[in-house]
Every structure is written in structure tokens, then in C-alpha cells.
Amino acid sequence: MRYADLYAQGKHALTQAGIEEAALDARLLLEFVCQTDRTTLFAHPELEVDEKQQEQFESMIAKRSERIPLQHLTGVQNFMGLDFMVNKHVLIPRQDTEILVEEVMRDFHDGVHILDMCTGSGCILLSLLHYSNDATGVGVDLSEEALKVAQANAKRLGLAFADDETGNEPRVRFVCSDLFEAIGEKFDLIVSNPPYIRSDVIETLMPEVRDHDPRMALDGTADGLYFYRRIIEESEHYLKRGGQLFFEIGHDQAEEVSALMQSHGYKEIEVKKDYAGLDRVVIGTFLGGK
Image (cartoon, rainbow, N blue to C red; front, side, top):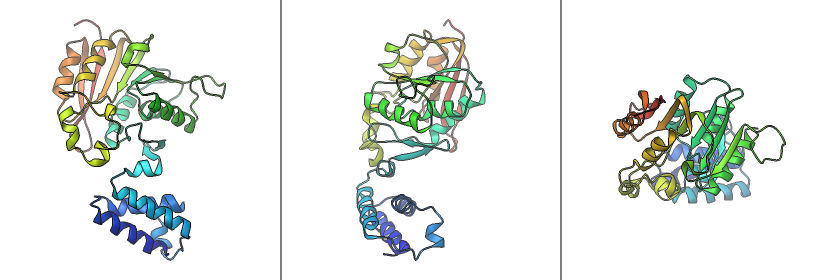
């Protein structure tokens, strides 16, 4: 079948299934299967797609029609200009989270030691390490399966990690821990995109998120603030004086998270907005005391 015809077939199927970005998803899946790029559809619409590729594309379109995330089909999500491996064990990196990384990088300096709490795929920590010199970090998650993904992403980016097989000096270490439970050192900064969705809201989310992102990466318990409370309360033992704490937050959580930080010795608290103009990041500097 011709490339353009197969694309049109896939786009139609996704449109019928109610996929909001049917045209984009059909194009990306076709490019993934055929190992082509975005120019192929316009420059070579007559290209013949072999039978095996056609069958693979149609299978992926059927799965996407069932609301399986595009990223779970391709196994990859771009974040901060880097390709990260993703699967059902980790939250798919989202553009809003790039705001968090960008805010960290504004005052970033080489040689800092970073703790990434609830690291998931490792996209936040690994992006920071990739775009810096001599910075080191620890990624923490309660899910061993998520940490396997983070290790695979460190390897993809050429970042030596503890217990890898390169023998190079590690820049990153991944720890399976219930928040700070297995941590015994201090850091220049802590960054976290913790679970922050209220439990009763999860069932209202789009199927791609509700049914395919790991529940433990979404559920912030009844008020969505459980992990903020724990991280803020315990962070004073793991953050150097003058160090900073960076959080991604839900759009309606800035006031409450800021108040929690202020009550535990954080100063110079700032709220940053995302590209849609919604509150997205809270930053505070730890000076100790209450």
C-alpha cells in the first residue's frame, strides 16, 4: 500500500476512535514503523510500504484506538530534547515537567549533588546531569521496575551509574526507597515531581493516564498533598543549609505547598507558571528553623 494511503487509513481509524490528535499519532506511528521522518508524507507519498510494515502499523493503530498511549507503543518519549525509554512502570514524561527542569537549570552550577525524589523514568535527574558538567545525583523510587527503566535511560545517555558494567566513575545512583528511608547523605538541591492527584479525581482522568500510567505515580491520597508533606518535613535532614527544594505541583496547589514549605524553614519561596499560565513549580531555599 502507498505510504499516504496507509497514513490516511490510520488517521481515519483513530478519528473514529475519538483520539484527539489522530493525525499526529497516525503520522508518528507510521514513521516509527517505517523508520522515516516527518517529510516523507509530503515528499514521498507514493512510497510503497511492505506487507510486514503495514501489518505492524495496523496493529499499532488498533492498540492506539483502545487508548493505549502512543509512548507505550513506541517505547519512547522525548523530554528536554532527549529520548527516554518508557513503559507501563513509569509515568510518561510531560511537557509541563520541562518547566521544573528549566527552573532548576536557571541557578544550576557545576558540581552540585542532586536528589530526585520519585524519579520514575529518571527524566528529570538525567536531563539535569546531561546538560551539566560534574554534577552528580541520586534517583529514588519505591518501584524497582521504575528504577530499571531509569537505569536503562542513564545507559542510553551515556551517564555512568552505580553498579553498571562500564567501570567508569558513576555520576548517578538509583535507590529503591520509601522516600528518604534509605538515604544517608545531604544534597545541594532536591527536585521532585511526586504523586499529587487527589484520589477521587483519578477516575476522571483521560483513559491513557487513568488506565496506563502507574497508579502509585499519580495518587497523592485524599487531598493530593501527602507526598509534599512528607518530603518537606523530612527534607531538612537531607538538604544542606542554603540548598533548594523544587516541586512540580498541580495547578491549584501552589498556596498550600508554599505554606508547608514556609512552616518548615524554607525562605525565598517562589511559584512559577507553565506555558498555559497555570501554577506549575514551587521553589524554596532551606535556611533551617521554623
